[in-house]
Length: 137
Image 1 (cartoon, rainbow, N blue to C red):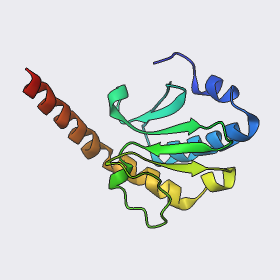
Image 2: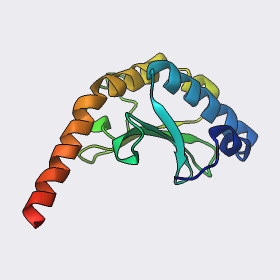
Image 3: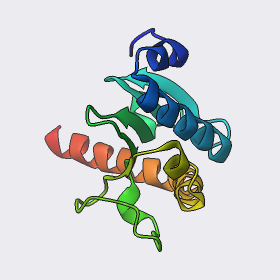
């Protein structure tokens, strides 16, 4: 992990993207109490614990003027508004083009749901890692 603070990282973004990222950060922190927040691979990462292995979502600015809010376990989330993009087994994201889109209550519900499911989601990953390690021993 890098030692740059989230505030320092945000200051380096273009003003329009910075505004979106700040709003997403506000929504994320409101809906994930006690989440661990850090900068990793040029994104704000949110983790269930202090470990980078326990990440559950992220905020990643894009060059085209929007910000991705990503869910590492998004494939398991109920998404009645059809906001999530992605077809893989787990990873999903939402392209957020404005501060108003970042305030979408449906996005807040997805963030709250991923936080609620975080213990079981992380446990399943750790269990899978132990199985792979045991097979390779």
